[in-house]
Image 1: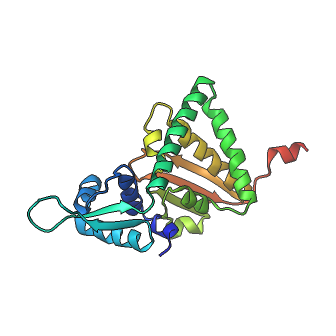
Image 2: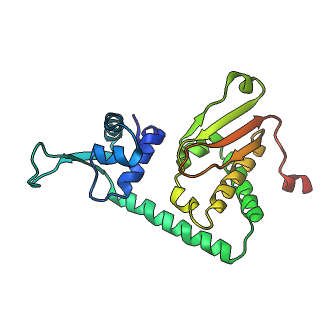
Length: 222
């Protein structure tokens, strides 16, 4: 399995998040406790991540503890983990700057709409964009909704959870709502609902209706 596909699973994405914050590594039992999962399930996910080249393991040496040495799991590229942490710090700074400049949520959403249209021009779909960003989208559309041209997507993971939980974190959700709106409008759809219920819930919900393309207002003025 490719690294890109491996991290689309929300539990495996959470394992990566925990290991990102554990530079000395963690055992399967440590990870299971942090994630409230059975350690056997964690081991299965770790096996997939290792096969994708994202995680490696080694036996602990020289601890003096009785019993078999523990197996420690680490990310294969700690530098990438540090880069992810740096990006979160940078995003937090930018959000404070946005608040200081008194940029409204309406303006942030409008910027997102522009970005969404740009993504659509490059041939991207909403599901592709959500996967690429790390939201681990799960298409849960039932047959009846699909027959009516609808689509329901649950976001199983928030790659910006730590920032979203902060003082100005709602701006991140507003920006992504705008991106979804703009992308759908340019590709023949409509955003019906964008329900951000909490960055750690794994239950944020996006509801879409597919229909006729909506023209860009700037094109209409031209």
